[in-house]
Image 1: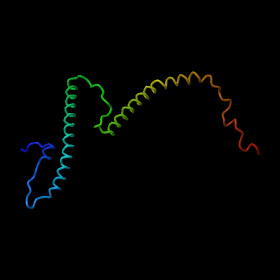
Image 2 (image 1 turned 180 degrees about the vertical axis):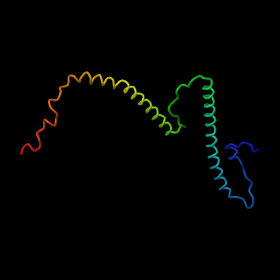
Image 3 (image 1 turned 90 degrees about the vertical axis):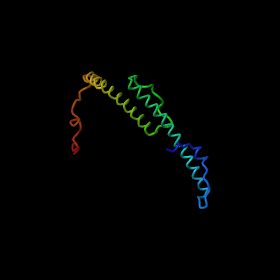
Image 4 (image 1 turned 60 degrees about the horizontal axis):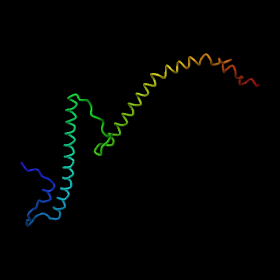
Length: 140
């Protein structure tokens, strides 16, 4: 089984020259690119390990029934901005729906009571609107 590599192993690796070997400058350039990409992948891998450990702790805590953790920041530099935006929009939508339900629960009865209270005070129309207008051809 090969031993695990790190970026320094790639940088330090030296190849022997052969009669019909590869262009050393091309190999060095390619290895520089490999080191750069390998370093990025190693960093991402480490971040994922930390994230996995945190999630495993969260799962264990929830299984023990200790309840949800204290709310953290809305977004960190590693979170997907679109996902964060969607979560915020969903929270706002739920909040507004709750507010609308509360208003609907209280407003209709208050409105009906106001209409019933004000209705007897409103003057009754003297005659229907159609009767109040002069006939169109009356001027002839």
